[in-house]
Length: 136
Image (cartoon, rainbow, N blue to C red; front, top):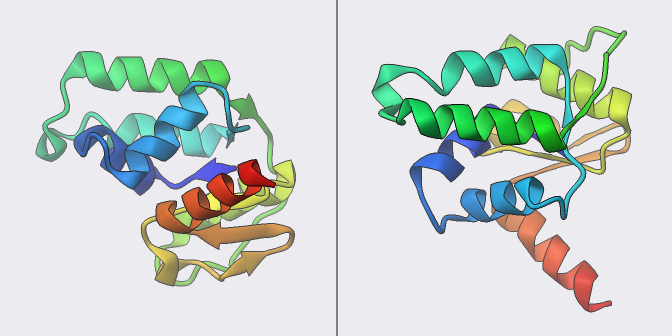
């Protein structure tokens, strides 16, 4: 899976939220998280923003955990499918390169519903799928 930055932010700002649950599953190693250098750079640029009011230690812990458990991929193709916010294409590039099953975002309208083999879903949709797949 690939996590849009807004999922990381929401997970850190809202304990017990659906985004927090997804982030915790990833950090605990239950989910394969794929990253690319541009995604890591975006996380590192966004999380310390003063308006988020995250403590430096929280940001450091989150970034360290994400880097530790994530699989780094190097996209070689430029994608231009996300029209609302051009940097969102970096998440599609990562998902495509990794062959990720899911891209999880809080901004579904910014992405196509599907990109190659990757389903674009919000945290609720992903968790519903995750729970139902564990029952089977």
